[in-house]
Length: 397
Ligand SMILES: Cc1ncc(COP(=O)(O)O)c(C=O)c1O
Image (cartoon, rainbow, N blue to C red):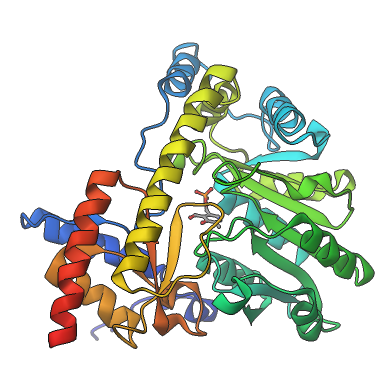
């Protein structure tokens, strides 16, 4: 008798986990490039700069010295001390290394926090638009996502009144990124303090993702850690400001009494963050490296200023200038009411890749696209020229 083989079906929870659509745009863009098309990449959420040489050298040296074994699950003490010192010198925030856990990227940090915090059915509030993977990580741990729409009229900021309206007795955490992906908006520390008060009064957590912290352009960068609270978790990463996306390294800062449970989960799900990356990252905090990073930040600021003005001149509707990160979230309603179609056509017809709002939340997503200024000004200028011609053609069609 012939055996009928049925393909394995994934767990039901995978039905709730959508792809990261920007990855599809990226692979379409790469496929077009393979066919010889020139593509301007404004979809990619990672710096175009290669990791600075002193950091690479430190990684290579650690390998040559045979440092190829696991580190403790919470990470190398030397790196945790370097991060604590960074908070003190750059932000005047006193953070004990005992509160710091090194993770495989901010992604690893978010999973550790959510995995240790959520019971099945717990609600997690998050502003929409926001970083898409957060929704899916909450679902992975059987949490329930409650998106709260933030609008351009409110500068994409979550107000305390709106937060309170959405809070229920099932709310376990509020998650937000500051500066935000995709809006680049920084949540003021006074708002952060008010949000923490709400969390503290309800035995819940505030999870602040500061992955774009070093990339703030018009004023000094800040950290939620300047507020003292037992309900605060801060996530950060070497990916963006430190230009180390491929090294897969990040960290979190938790209340000290909570670290043992994070340590226990880390031991079980990834054992430790990559050793080579940890040795390399220690070098990232040396004055010479910080100098290089600050020069790169200045370059991002120039790009932001150029692109913001250029998009405004083309007729995109923009909120006030983003404070940080490397994104501009633009309202395309003067040209289209379907950002997915707009992004697809822009790629196919004009060779410019952007991310449709669909990735960042359901509300108003069709009205927005995200432009990333992770490419140099000459490329951005070429991109803007192509977008201009595309829009003119679109208006005629
Ligand atoms: C807001 C936000 N958090 C977390 C991540 C994940 O970063 P990592 O490379 O550190 O895992 C990203 C990546 O784009 C992001 O934009």
